[in-house]
Image 1 (spheres, one colour):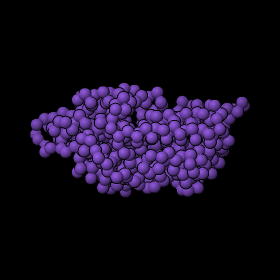
Image 2 (cartoon, helix red, strand yellow):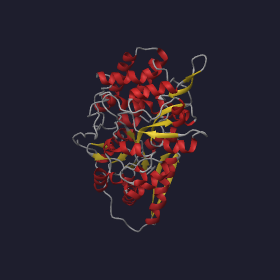
Image 3 (cartoon, rainbow, N blue to C red):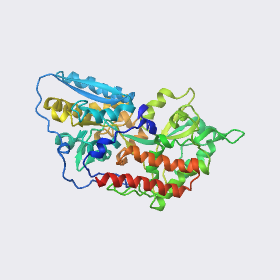
Image 4 (cartoon, rainbow, N blue to C red):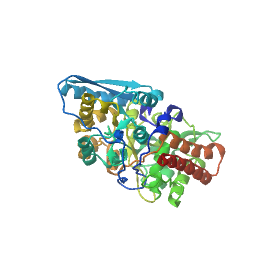
Length: 454
């Protein structure tokens, strides 16, 4: 996710050959509208799934390799952790490498099985099932895994497989409502919407058109192929539906009336209320920064983006997600750090890598990363930190953090393509919305069936 957001499909070229040959791995999912995902019963594991056991530290100098994709703030956030870590551990050096996004997963897949590449890598949380299944990564050692289990917010549960924890979250991102104060005032709206009905009414008041009916100012520009398809999941919960079953095996977003209503609500923003239109601007995030849209559902990292990139005169603020018929929900994402299978083969590198991950999991490590990225800490004992809750911009995100969950994706690239095709079938090809929803669900189910069949 370059610039911290969901990239378009062309930027998600995933190496599939290793996954095809890899062993099966049951999935722990967080698909139902609950505060904490449920886990599956641990199953038999391969050697790469057993978890690493670090050896005692020595004073011998050791260098470890850490890889990330070229991602701006995330690179600087990890560098801030590295700089402080090596001061306290002078015998350990860390070589930080950033790679082009298009090449990142391909290089991971080629290097780790060959015995080269990184000891620690940054992964998207939705990649972890396939990375684990392909043998690229190993579970955390028990002491570090126990710390994550006991000290981290519920979102950390979604990177567990077979009861084993595979990552240390660098941060958590969740959605909140960004709004342009000036545009709402001009539309005679005194406060941000608190319900989805109020949101639609506000968006309609804030939308402007030219003489030909083209939108010149969007009440809400829905960027479906950015994070719009991610925000769709909490909308499903707001209407009482589920994206998938709790074990991750069954696609459910077309099964219940609530899930169907959520799909219709999102489509109606364009088709009925006409407050949004595909390709209105380069991206949803940039349209809001330019002052061309009045409201935007964005993840936490956008705070930093708007602070640096909002056009002169754009005064923005953040509010909690409006509530639907069944309440207000948000969903999260994260770019955690993982321990590669390569590191687990070298005791000195393993020990150094685990030490670094433990520091990343600490309060100091979390604070260093989030000071740079403007994201949220992962530790429960930081939820009441005045640094975050006293900030009116960060408070709406913090308020939603204890209830922030995510969803495991059996194959993130393929599943997001199902969602893109489903949406474009309606917008570009005038396919009946409910037929498109059924087709999208069938596409998603086929991917889950393939994942669990191996």
